[in-house]
Length: 370
Image (cartoon, rainbow, N blue to C red; front, side):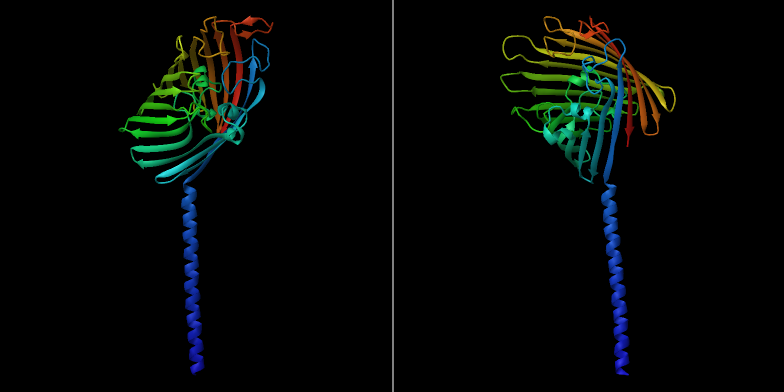
């Protein structure tokens, strides 16, 4: 009788123990599952794939004849890039790893070397409080209307102001939320577009004042500093204004104007460039929007070379007019555009191989966003 009682007790104890262990294991698995779900909810993966076709209407179709702007300067069928963006957004901290592969990506990170050439952005951030955010690493520029990613631009080809302004920076920046509409930013950075290292032992400072409302936004941007070896180049100053407003439900108007000047090392005059561009866009339907980019871009005292037709004093200008359509099919956008570049001096060649001031071209871009 005693043996049976002990046996029953052991059976019951074993059953209770196994039940407890089962519940404990299930609870642990549920906890791990919940932790993984929480982790993955903070991780995002996005990006784009793009390619294009470009054809010169009144000039030979080779890669020597194209507007001197980034990303859409190859003839025939050409590749853009694969853009993959991995992000983590925690309660206070996070990171962004933005990788690019392809011709557009190479041009975007042209001052990087080796494996760094696939890195478009790579930074960590700390949301100190609801009004202050610190960002450390490599990030795309805050200057200008256009962006490296084709998903952020209405036009497929890019403007002269975008091409010859900075594309990316590496450094430390602080964003400040002043109130519901006003913001500010201060930054200390490497020379522009030297994103994987600093070969000059010089730094530039950046600043921004921003305003955002329901119908649009405006940003006043600045950068100042030595963009090369001291003694070889003087400090550069840039002031830039970018604004965009929804005039009506269907009509949007954007504007970008910029001024860049570099001080001379010895006797002489400052050199640089300036420009202005308007971006009117009209939405005709849920799938199609048509827009125009009209840009005036001027170089003075040899501030840039081999960009537009310059005279003997290093002065010249170009008017670039781009008519663009955006037709969306789900996550795919087709971007046909006609572009006419007219320079102050002969800079292009026509089909008879004669020097000319004009170049007209057609571009069809295809951008898939995921």
